Length: 155
Image 1 (cartoon, one colour):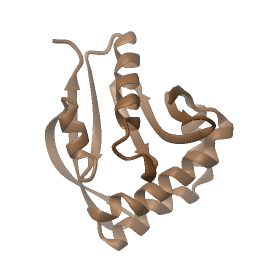
Image 2: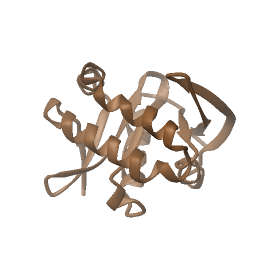
Image 3: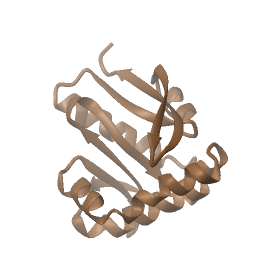
């Protein structure tokens, strides 16, 4: 498996991976209505194109298949981290998170943070993130519980 910057030509693969992961993995922690709203973000083509074109999005490839992706934004914000449902627990998320932390350190950042789903919270906590606060966010009139989590990059 290798990490590389996302290309515009990856957009459809990222959208499919996102949609399937939300529907197959996050469904164990969120209601069907929440999953419907969350996964509906896949239909916003402009959003996905701008995410990839703005930079800071990285993919993990196994041979030629995208099996995970993540994004790092200004100030150390991890905006997305999704792994293919068949690659859960196989090191894809760790590979991505390690890469994002290295990029953040190379930019002189001393911490990274994210808004983490209930599903991903144990993964982030196991990798040294701490919960700053639980929160409830609203999307299309539907509330979602998640966690603001952060990790210091310098000891």
